[in-house]
Length: 384
Image 1 (tube, rainbow, N blue to C red):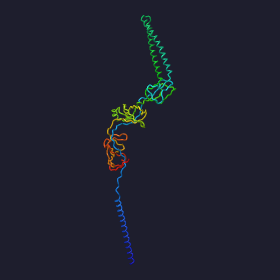
Image 2 (cartoon, rainbow, N blue to C red):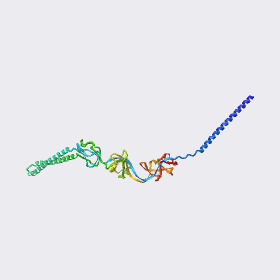
Image 3 (cartoon, rainbow, N blue to C red):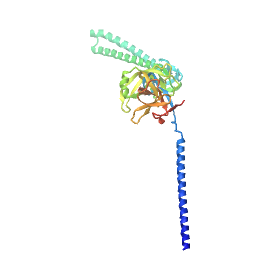
Image 4 (spheres, helix red, strand yellow):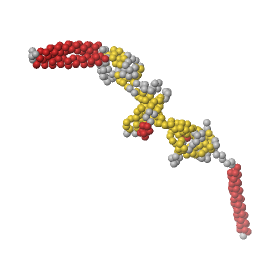
């Protein structure tokens, strides 16, 4: 009995000890939780409020100036006159009167073909003419004598008619001889080939000593007139009505690769139909080209001035942004570090600039780079 009481007492003591241990662990856990919470609260309280980061941007000022309104295209320089010089008679080429690439004047001697066969043909034609003229004079004299005899019935009218017919036939032969002489003289003149225009010669296709053929497919030389020249180009048909009102408008042209001054000419030709496959109309402008800045076959940048917009507001194209609704806007700098979103209306774009109709004032500053990180509440830092 005494042993059982001791066991019970021992069990109670152990239970009490276990309870005390659990309570102590719970208290320690609670203290740790509270401590962590206080520490976190202290840290939160001590952390400074973050400062808004300035967005780096580049800017440009809104300029106000008079701007020419132009239609731009790619054009091709063409000579006003282009002549492929060919021989009209055959023979041996005796002389070349120029060097490749020379400038020649109208009427300048270019080639000489051996004229001796044509001199001989001309002399023969002239001799035939003289012979037949002598026969004509004899036939006319006989017809005149017989005209008196037939009146007196000394000869028959039949004989007289034969003589008259012979005289008329002799006249026809003489007329044919005269034509033959003129043709021989013309063939002789073709032995000297002269320039039909003022221009610049190209490559020489046949050299002295070679045989040339009449009307050969290969020309002896090609001459291009380069003062003045045409520039041919095409623009969309939507510009046709405006261009018809502006025929004679100034046109500027500059080689695509640069290196030459801008040439100025006038619009002189509008084609009589629109190309239905491309929806464009072909135009030509005439340029004096005294400085020879334009060369036949060259591709050039063409600009037709159709109007002049006075006091236009100009901003770089990269300043423009497009909203989700399709409108365009810019960020305007306010107070040096703030920005304002401003809706704008664009009149026209020229090169890398835009003409603004509404939304901006002269002298304002707009953001040209860095807009993707901006909002109306952003702070900015101007670079450069």
